Every structure is written in C-alpha cells, then in structure tokens.
Length: 334
Image (cartoon, rainbow, N blue to C red; front, side):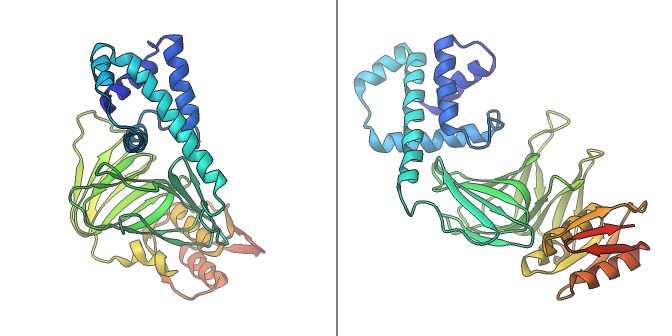
C-alpha cells in the first residue's frame, strides 16, 4: 500500500463515488485526525498526515509477502484496511498524549500550546510574541495574535509548517534534501535554508512575504490562472497580495527594519495602510481600536521603539490629521 493509492481512495470519496462502507471508513478516519474541522481535506495537510501515520505504521509492522500478493489483486480492499489502521493509530497516539502527565508543553502567560494527533499548536495573544525551535533546528519568531502548527517530528524529507493566522519570521536550518514549506491560506512558501517573514492577518487587506537572505519559491494555492508559475524570491525581494483587488506585486526593499523589527518590540512602518497600523498597535499594546475617521487612505511611515501607547497615538494621529480618545484599553479614532 502506498500513499498514492490511499490518496486515490480519498479522491473517490470527494467525488461521491465511494460505497457506503468505504465512505464510513474514510469518515471514521477523518474524525480520528480532526483538529479544527476538515477544511484541509483538499490541500497538502492530507498528504502530510498520511506520511506521518504511515511512518508510524511502518515502524510497528513488518511487510508480509502474503499481504503484498493480495494487495496486487485488490488494492482497494487493502486501502480500506490501512485507513482503519491509520485511524486507530492516530486515535491511540492521541490517547497516549492525554494519559501522559508531561506530554503537553508547559504553558506561558499569553501563549497557548497543545499537542494533538502528532501536531504542535501555538497561539499568541495580543502584546505577546514567542520564539519556537523546531525539531530540525529551525527557529520561528511568532508575532502577537498569531496561530501556528507543525508536526512533532518531520518525516519523509518534508518540513511542513502552517501559519494559520498572523505574522512570523522563519530562520530555516539548512537541509537540501528536506524542503521547508510554510502554508498560509493563499500561499505555500518553500525554502531549503534561509530567513523570510510572512505577514498574513485576516483583518488586514494585504498579505506579504519578504525574503531576508537565501532563496524561496512561492506557490499560489488559489491561482487566478491554473498555469500560473511559482514565484522565486531573491534576498531583499518581497511579494504583496492586495486581497481586495487580487493584485500581486513583486518589489525590492533595502531596509529590513519595517519588516523584521517587530520581533524586537519595535513598531516600524513604511507606507503602511490604516489596517496595518491599527493592527500593529493593537497587537503591540493589547488594545482595541475603532476607526471612525473618514480618512482611511493611509501611507504611514514611522518608527517607535520605547514610546508609550499615548505617545504613539499622538504621533500617528498628528501625522494623519485625525484625533483619538483613550478609554482604558479601548481607543477611538475620529
């Protein structure tokens, strides 16, 4: 049984061509691996999950010649059996972590971590950043209000990481035999050994991927044209997606500060939009900002290191010609 055969059975399920018995097997398997719903049924999550579970099965079971001969005659029946084993393996894996008192990572204030089905989940609150060391030695700096997940162990020469929300700086350990891929809703960014920053907040109208050093390939997971070629970035190049217009722009940058200084607690803006400025201030100071101003076409540039929230707001509002009022953790722009 190989991964392609299992994926073919999944494709048959997605097309509605499975028998009731086959559908039940797959649905039981999906229930066993569910994490935040089934939204990743059609992307590389399925393949990564299959590789993870198959590797565990391979470690526990030796190949049986009789099974191999039967597989050649009726691979579909074997596929169903393997899916049952995979589901059981994942369920057992999950129960193992629940039973172990030290299996879950230690919690820190403002950072939520947990392990589920062989994956590590990390979420940061407003005002909090986190540094994560992956199994391969790669380092991730996760910005505030961000969600990230990655497998406990990288297998089969694949290093998948999912940035489900927010911003992160990736310093990737070199391993040319194992591509390192970061998935967001829109893009898959692949590197062998490099440093790059991804900003992908749902409340912002832009998504940006910026290369600090090395070389990366960016695949559009939702291309407007099916034949769209991957984008290759060289050092100090950036692509920016405008989610409103769908326009994808590739540019060069010379100053890294507006891109990476957030990891040092610095607010640095270069021609930033209103939603980028507001979201960055909210994340930095753990506040909520309501913009009631009619002035929404911002192109703000400025840097703040040790300034207080009040000083930052005064400077920004003076520059943009608006006023603001502060009521505890709630700010209103007028």
